[in-house]
Image (cartoon, rainbow, N blue to C red; front, side, top):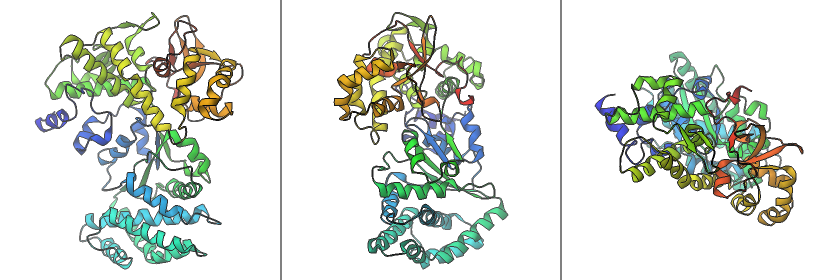
Length: 520
């Protein structure tokens, strides 16, 4: 590692957060993004298939995978559109025209114009003077009223103003009128010239659309607008195209997007689901340990930095920080690494939050900055952040289930770590109905399953209960009347679930020995 790289890493990995920031948006340096990005996982391999839609839960690494185009895919030009403000306003503007007999195909064309005009505005500053497309782009943008000094943000704002202005008239044939205002004929010829030139030069372009926290799906007009967006993005990234559109969507709303889509098989055929398994999370932890130790010239807990490049080496590096075993709250002795991982929902952010908390607790208890953690530091480190993690889950699902926290507060203390459908129905009648303001038990159960609070028991041994949770499967988890259910350790701990059996619940996929559930 060069002295420059060490300085960069030290900006993000320090004694208070040796495993780094939990939010990738805090990482401003492109070099830091590249250094911190861990590549020993199946998800990284799938990026080379050029997914048009990346679906992941809050904390799954959507932003990191979006930013990986800067160093992992050889793109010549990269354009980022700020989803937090710009993207939401585009949705609002287009939603104004999504009434009556307006079809997804038509709205898709408007989205195409909006995003390509943003692309044109960025590329005209990046293309060399010799580019034949540069003049066409400049002429087109001038024709629709874009100044030379117009930024990407200015360009998208200008387009949304045009859409809003035309939509206010609510005239027949509004889509055609909008496209005429954007000079669709010249638009098509400009785009064709750019595509041709990129192909000739064997260059690729990436247009990045990060995820929104709230897509306002409660409004029908927004749903129609998103239907057009999904159609456009889903049809992008064809093998022959040099222009990639990459859209991030929150997995918390994934089933709603499937319902919105006019053709899910087409719109989501180039999707990437950010699902993780335990060994991959261990690789992330070991990678961060390696960077931390190397940047501060420390040797522990690694024999060599290169050793973390193998599965065995990564697990050995992480285990060297931890006691071999830990006695859990049930009085059961379990492997410490498994104990930590079962308190996550297999998300990188959850693991980083927990490991940073353990490191901070260890520093307080021992008065030392070393990365050697004892049982007390592990237990207290996890208990200190369990509620933080659960609160983050509630926030992520708030657009869909605003009452989730209230339901859990009232119902989970009345449920044991393993229970039947009948037990769940009784709790719903006594507490759930009032907390939800609804008498629909199916919605009650669906919410608890979807947020990862409850799962289905798939195995029970002498030592533990293994449960399958929806966040590990690409479809809805369906339970039968004879199924036994279980509570995720995070929710059981935060809401003091009853103990029916003195066995810890192990979510499937959270032990390094578990099979890769994504291959099922």
